[in-house]
Length: 106
Image (cartoon, rainbow, N blue to C red; front, side, top):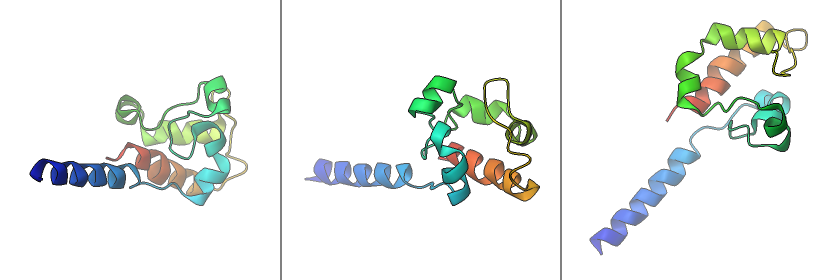
């Protein structure tokens, strides 16, 4: 009985942890086609373009906010389109600091 209860508690905790982060409406509208609503880039377009998996701890650790904001603003050589003329500086900042970084939080 103790083991079964422990397993149920662990399963519930895992479900809450997995669902803990929900991206903004802006991320869903502008970024999820490639990066997915879960940030893993496991979408047909994301796989085709080799989009970045935002849940990857190595990516989260090595790439600065400034570098990400530049990539979102100006686009990248990996086919990421520029959003600097479409989104405000505040929106770009929030996408990186709240959404992209949100996928890295555990």
